[in-house]
Length: 374
Image 1 (cartoon, rainbow, N blue to C red):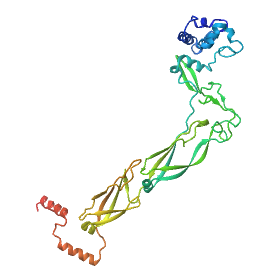
Image 2: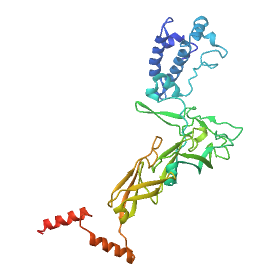
Image 3: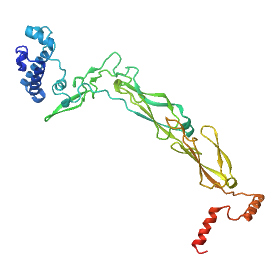
Image 4: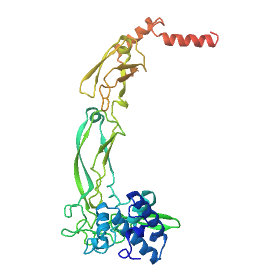
């Protein structure tokens, strides 16, 4: 069946006054019936499909339809016909035709596959607790893929260009019929790129990217903790052939501190004091991470294990306001080395004890006497 010999309206089986919706509906029904994927190896179906495609290409366009209605096929001679000089509708490859007829439900998204984004990268950074308190700017050096300077990320040798893949027609994917279904897969020839590089760049071997050491400035905000993740957008691995780069993630690890243990925004420490300070009271100085000395008042008679809380003396709140608390646990230390004078004073103190000085121990031994019958 030749589209140049048969009237376009007869090809589609519609009247000359049919509207656009009727023409489109007729075309879809005929295209579904005669599509080559549904009639593999049938030349008649292939020729019919080409004819209805040419007819539809003309009649769906108001200007082309008006010219055809007035002059017939003569309106498209000398290269002016629907689909070009050869009188064939320009649908690209078979995948495009199938997409045009059946929509995305049968053929996927259509069009060339999106370029693959570069991989995300991870960098582990170890910092001290003081650096976590104040924050810091740090320069790191990593080896990362970046766009090739020679080919500017195209992957092709300078002066040459990638050509459209012959297998997929530049779509990046191919369709194959399996029973009643059409399955879409990445093109095995161009691996989904839609293009084939015949003269690869010598520096990047057609990848469009090379591995180079790179120095980056990283801002660590105050209040970070182990496990905090900092994202540097677009600083990861470059995508192949000019595709977007991935991201770089900085994972923070805070080293243990000699004095403080951290629990969220709370700083905790254990401070030993003499038994005389525990009995009489006093004050101690603790250096804070902010560089200021913290004066802590010790009440008279404090016991080991007692915790004193200092509000607002802890870690900064990450990306927020204020600071946590500092918790100081008291450990009363018993002297192990005494001079003769000190020992004499303590013996004198022991002789003056009434039992009321240490109510907890007095109460404990009272319980023992009661429990064991005196």
